[in-house]
Amino acid sequence: MKNKEKRKVNPWNPLPPYAQVEEKLVRSKAFEGLRAHTKWLFVEFRLRYKGKNPRGIIFLESEAKKIMDLATFRTDVRILIKLGFLDLVKRGGFYKQPHIYGLSKRWERYGTKEFIEVDMDKIFPKFNKEK
Image 1 (cartoon, rainbow, N blue to C red):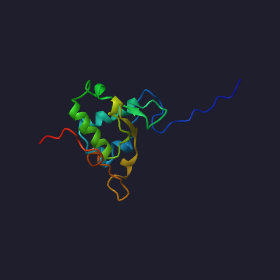
Image 2: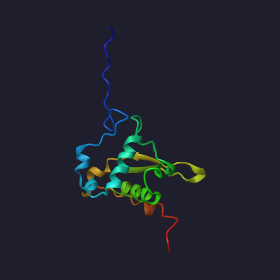
Image 3: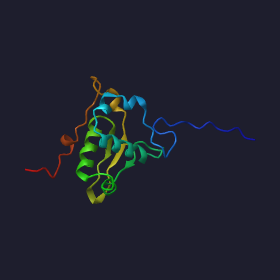
Image 4: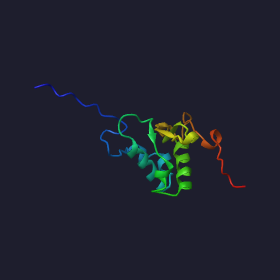
């Protein structure tokens, strides 16, 4: 009999298809201030992570329409990026390419001098602003 190799536990998501959300994250200042549907959207992003690459999550707007209003989805994604739960790895939209998101741990430094806030409106301004 061969010795069984120890399986490395992935800190992002040890047992797909489950969405692991750490107590440290849930009790953080950044997470406590989120609205309920923003928290649910974060769980949806965690469910899409399949254990290989935490920086390669694709969440299409057509999929988002099934669970929430599209304007709410866009606003909540911006909030999750701003507070450090997600990063926009690659911007899509050109030739119908999807956005690629990544799970981030910037939220751990939220409220400290080391926290890096990413404001999506400054990087990519909204095109459909009402006048």
